[in-house]
Amino acid sequence: MKKLVGMLVCSLLLIISSVAFANLNDNKAAMQAQYGDYRLIIDSDNQLWTKADWEAKGYKKAKAASYTYSFSRQGLTVQMEALYDSNKLDSLVHTQRFTPDRAIKIKDFKLYFPELYRMIIAPKAQIFATHNLLSRHFQDIESPVRMGVLVKELADGKNGSYYPLLAFNIQDEGRLIKDINLINEDTYIREFTIERTYRTTVHDAMDSGKPAWKVIKNYF
Image 1 (tube, rainbow, N blue to C red):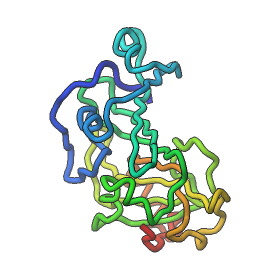
Image 2: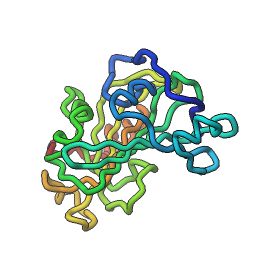
Image 3: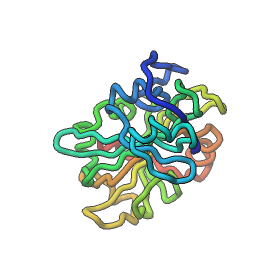
């Protein structure tokens, strides 16, 4: 998580595979075009920097762990934190966390995040639920049941092949969800991440004799 030094620069969007969904594997220029300038930096010592302070002196003495962006859609304000592969200026994002200022229903996701909805309607996307941990990046208390969208198409990255994964922290009108069967189109999303998950993880969780990731109906 200790990544990225320097200022945003204009460069071409780098695509490292045929899987080219919005955000995952975008570079900093593409992120800026999609979400605007970053607002804050958290460095590897967990110190917070404003954009102005970071670009004036912060990058000379510290390593960035994450970049924070803020944007609004349809009256919804969203904070998005991006983590990059390395400290190079053209490094690619490998993990993002989206935290809306209020929870949204699953059925309304495409209204606020059309660029991410592409992943959910991809031909090889599988929607699933699980009692297992899906992400270590959630900030809020999680329900015992988590929901995910796996795009089962391998992409090649610096550290091997992986699948794109959307992981959701879901609730039922503020209550925790304890049963997979309670998920429906009116279930609320409190926060979500885009991450990479590796083939061995997917095989153990979804393709084994007793899968921990249970495929469910697409309520999006």
